[in-house]
Image (cartoon, helix red, strand yellow):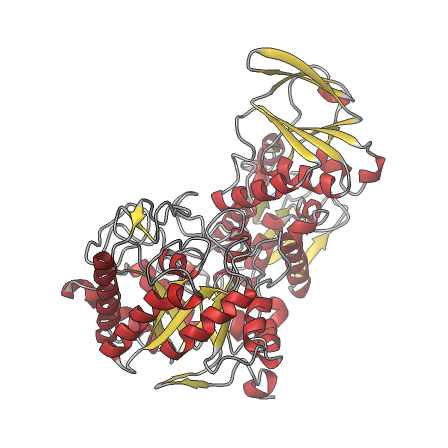
Length: 639
């Protein structure tokens, strides 16, 4: 069966103006937060990243990094590519050609930030997108010219398209929304007036570049916030804009914590939640331009269904292609089940604030395309490898070692693979992690890997192996206070929640503790989290913490005591000190969720077992899936 017979909709070409996309899949813009050392042009790391997006088989790659305006400088965090200075364009031209090499079209996302001191109207400030006084007509005219110059510069650099970001409360989006636009001149009030400035920018760009560039515009089809853009208003906005653009991308949400879970859908939202917004636009029958959908779409099969059922004309994918750049190729070869699922952890998005390195929890080579991704080669000498532990680190190490040609055996003390990931399966909002666990287990089963379940390993068990990789994980940390032995370990009650009373005292308000609290509250339990630090979930990445706090605020059965240091526990009470005073709170059950302790001593006991012994994952230090994946990769490729 040919490719077009397998995927007749998503893989069919589409002509838009003077541009033909070879298929209907677009790589969504990804800001290369840490793929820059201050250069005002794409670094070699950024070039390699976007080149890999083109190699992935998409019809168009949308890069991100151009800053609209002449005052372009390194801000110490984000990429800031300068389109205005001639010798800064050299690498932008190279970027376009690297994308073109794979018969993909090159697009550039443009996000314009208002000059300092200006916002759409007095008092409007959303997530740092400007604050202060209403932008003047003179400043608007200058800002419009900046957009035109950026577009013209991209034409000269060989780009085929631009994506103007006018959604998610970005400055241009603030003009569109009645929630943020309180102007009383011809740019505020009615839908037509609120669209006026963006239309002027689009028309000015078109007058300058003609049909040399496709003009795509992203809007929030709905902002969800009362007083903002709803679906009906979003469609009205789209109708006004469509005669001034070539492609309309329909997203959803706003740049505030309350609605960011729609901007970047996570486990608190159902799969692909924004498709329905694009579908409403498409099925309104009011649009003659292609409608694009975006938001947590991470399989070619899903993209095919979306287009085939008339929900959108084009599908844009970001995180799915970060998690697995081979997403398209695997599906075309009939192996869609092998695509690595994105767990929607937002580690990639939070690169500026979490380690300041672009990474992915399930793809260890993300951000390293220019350096180590080429190192995975078949082995010259086959080794007999023992993997101790069948959790995420152990399974991933076994897969990579097996793929390289080693003889691999996993020793797992429990009766099933998966390790601590099984705990995530109890939380409804952790379904992406459960999907990843099931993918890992299936992938191990597809390889020639010997799996010994119900088999605790010892240093003697693995004598005779050439290499041993220890991935035995961590165990719950028991708070060293009187009476702690009377409390229950929180993760041990998963699956047995019906044995608990109605009033739960949960000691520990880190990310896992907050997730546990939400889970129990969703089952109808009244939960009080007691956390010694002043904030809940300080260990979570920024976006994940924002998401958690929004859900906690919505849950009326969940409350928290922060800055409360536990002094004594019983099976039904917690004595804590807060602001210099001791208090005691009582409930039906006390649960401990105070972190994990690495099984360091047990892991170290395997050092004499072989000439090559490596430790990976939580037995090194209790952390996240990202570290399990990364250390598994590093260990297995160096065997």
